[in-house]
Image (cartoon, rainbow, N blue to C red):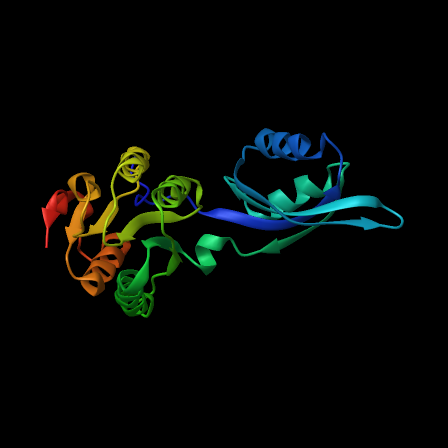
Length: 228
């Protein structure tokens, strides 16, 4: 299934709980028993309260429950010390385009992506652009594989002058979990497996954003294997 497909809305809360081994399993079990599904869980901070002992603050996103029901069930759990609503990251930052590469290519690709994202965000979209300049096959391959673990990642743009070897293997692995890969027209085998190959970096950033925007009529599936 493609990551570009719509997902169900989620409810987000910030939760303080006693730092015990059974706390998180208890929270997940309580949500499941009420008919909800935990989608994301991330630790925000840890600290020690003089009266309550070790505490942890987490951000929890749940599908299938409304805010009132989720708050009620969480406040009933014995390890929970506080619960407050927040906005889920998909509502704040929306879909993410990840740009990986180096040098002048990545700068120009990001320029095109941010300019295009601004155009769609003015029309009601929420698209963010995240980037990291890297060099070296091992570093680049690891970064490509890690995109699969990034929440809300919808596409990857590879902006460099030469990429192949293990990077190409990492691209294939990423595509297998539904994330399309756009690449600049560069030296190496990455261009043989990328969903879309574009010569101009500014155009590449623009088209990558168009591919994940609901307010555009650009479909990666229909462009697969093409070069521009």
